[in-house]
Length: 190
Image (cartoon, rainbow, N blue to C red; front, top):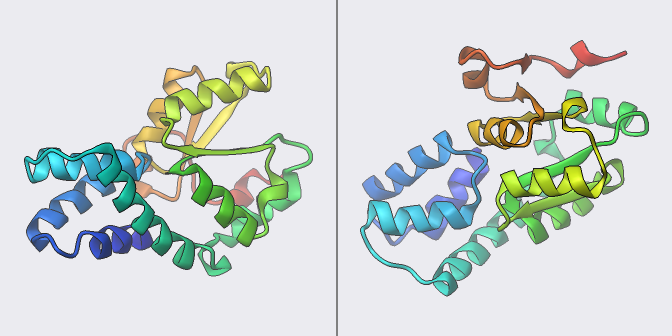
């Protein structure tokens, strides 16, 4: 989240800091939403300006350059989570569904050398509710036997929308709100 915040601040550096701060609050409350939605929110709700899809695309491409350079560093991976994925990816079909840009997400997974652990990696601009539903259909999963592990309320909403169990992780606010929560992936080891 801190790297994404930096990305928004750099891309929007020509705008007043107080307005960018408002976007950052929205970003923190809606971590799972795509940058496309967040940029549109910034212009239409914070600045009260209209913005074209092409302008949003241009901002998103600048944001993507920052994300590619910063987030493709393995130091940002959570070691306990990575160990769980490495140990169980053959026994448990795992997928990534993210609000991050689809192309950027796949690029970063390749750079981080984690692509082979997942059956699919999907991101925005398609919204997460639809991505999760499409994944369930594509792989013929029973929703009641699936778990979506996520770090945002938007992840919970995507799970709930598709009849999938949700477990929060890496965002203590979700634990405080009473959602099922993973404090440490070593708790889940078999």
